[in-house]
Image 1 (cartoon, rainbow, N blue to C red):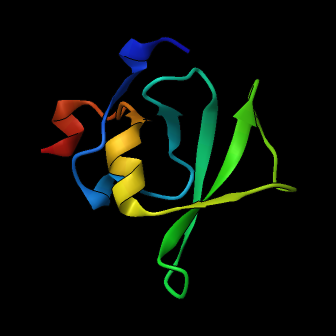
Image 2: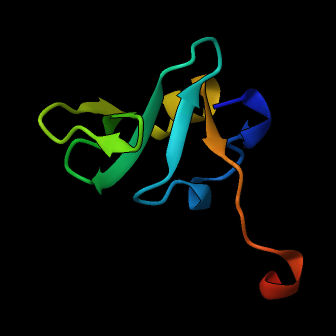
Image 3: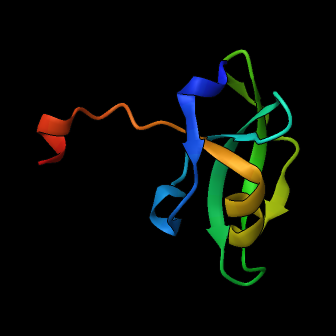
Length: 82
């Protein structure tokens, strides 16, 4: 995927289950999982060629996601958002 499909994470409301995220300095894509309130972080799964790998996950804080990752741009048209 190209960088122009991704944008900076500015708000926690962008962090929804199933969202695709990518490191600012790397090309690897991840899929955002559920938020874990006990551990205060999001489960993140590797995502490659349309497949989410459930057998491995990483826990990332909201701060880490906002500072070091980009999120896939929303595909919703402005007319539907209004």
